[in-house]
Length: 162
Image (cartoon, rainbow, N blue to C red):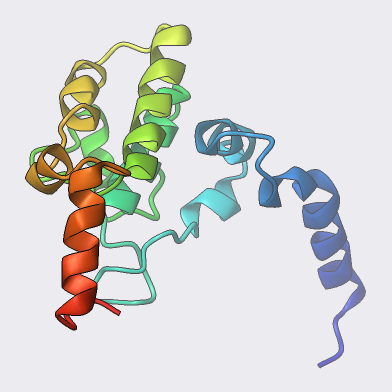
């Protein structure tokens, strides 16, 4: 495929302007803040891999909700690339389950960013309850605990785990 000159300019602009996005030097919320004014980009933003339709965001999975909160934490509205974007701060957090420490850390970083930037909203006050919720398995078998290591060995010997 041969690209036209204007298409090459757009690609060059994108690469020059958003070069840092692939790195870990910025939090997800900071990255969202940097692209929030790029209307075409955010209206076509796709983060979801769990929804039934693979060509759009479901708006309901943990990653979709987290990304919407990234926008709210920066003081920006939820973009049209999410199905219920018009809900704004009334986004539903009722069924959110964080399955690991990394997810909890991401959600806590959104909360810290919002608080630091004096973002107000009901959703902000709900975040600690979500990121402090620890699953039953993690409570019974904390990471790196002797109990957890014992269960791993038993499962491996019994063929339940490779």
